[in-house]
Length: 329
Image 1 (tube, rainbow, N blue to C red):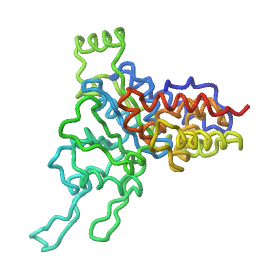
Image 2: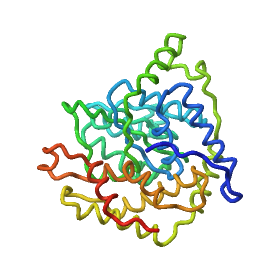
Image 3: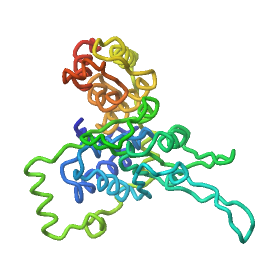
């Protein structure tokens, strides 16, 4: 997935909001080098009110990326390091007894923020992982029967390390399906890595984004206007059928034992509309669907064990489905 080139805005496309989100990518680049595609994915997630699973080896700036996006959007962000001893209340909040009033009061957990960074989410047991299900789906926390809504906007950006599985708890399919996108954070190219070294040699401190020159270039109001514009993007009936056929194609792919669900189809519709709007169009094309199909669907599919042992990847199966399902004209 590469970032779309933002074209001239149409009169109905909320051009100010789109220009603000375009500036966001340039602002993030002040601190994070060479991750434009991942930044675009995070923006799409914010536009669709969805969550993101970031996968990459340690040291590719996953944490810095999320913090920088939040700073450039003037949103609050909090980080939780998921560990085996983390309890559900450590994430969502809990009731605390106050001896002065002889009553229990609710102490908010770190989920009460705009952008929650769930670092190494697969290192905590299923009991704590499941505490995020209500948070991600309903955007609320229920304690002792009382519902407490989360701020808007709110998304979870969770990270995983793809090369170290000892002491981890793989996310169940039901929770994986709650993530709108799974984005792969690659290692930088040689020139980009040289840029990272030059920045650190010149005194760049990843813990001080202000000193790096990162400033808010968009606001929650811009995001709200952009969401309204994305909702208005037109999708023709043949393109709707194409989305359904792609998802149905994954369900009959011989290499897969689990294909994309109807939730996956609705996610693909939403991400394609956001991608199209960011590219300056007021309608979705089949190419828009293809551009976001892999990050939207890859984590919703499960390979057959014997196929996985042969080295086949989910992305390769998706490529085959995209190549065989007829594209509408």
